[in-house]
Image (cartoon, rainbow, N blue to C red; front, side, top):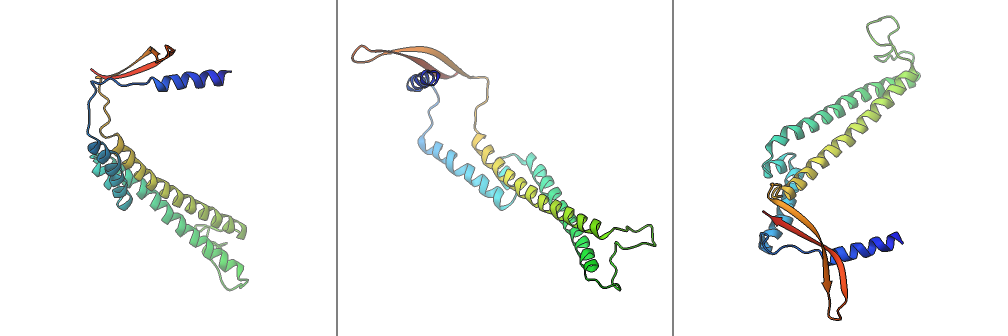
Amino acid sequence: MRIIAFTLLFSLWTLNAVSQSDTLQVSDTLVQNFKFKKPNRAALHSAIIPGWGQLTNAQAWKIPIVYAGLGTTTYFIIWNHNQYKRFRNAYRIRSDNNPNTKDEFDNPIDIKKPNYSTEAVLRLREDYRRNRDLSIILTAGFYALNVLDAYISAHLKDFDVSDNLSMNIRPDVNTFNNQQIIFGVKLAFNRR
């Protein structure tokens, strides 16, 4: 019963939603140029060169944030990959069953250098591989966030957030040809 009442109320509300005629009129061409070309262009710019879309949207203050995020995640990719290669090579040397070969982590005499067991070398190799893969995913996510930010900011660039906006919700009564009375809600968006 609640679903039917909600559906009926929503149907009446959407049928009677109107806008006042004294609102700002904008040509269809201008709306289409803004809605479809500029946000897509800003997203394309950010996809080609990170931060270019933010520059297109006149939000240059975001560019250092974009490059700091991408630079940090790229640094962690490189560092984790180098550590992964070190432990991978150490594990390969240990698993070749040649007693004459020693890796950099097999130092029972020198206490300043690390001395890891074969299991520890294997575990650390897998940890650095997992961290490298996670850093790659974070970099891709940050890159996508850069493109998404440029796209959304271009859509919201001309969004009016001044105090001169208002919205009025009023009850509305309509009559049709056969004298049927329909109750609803009227929405009026005004610019003061």
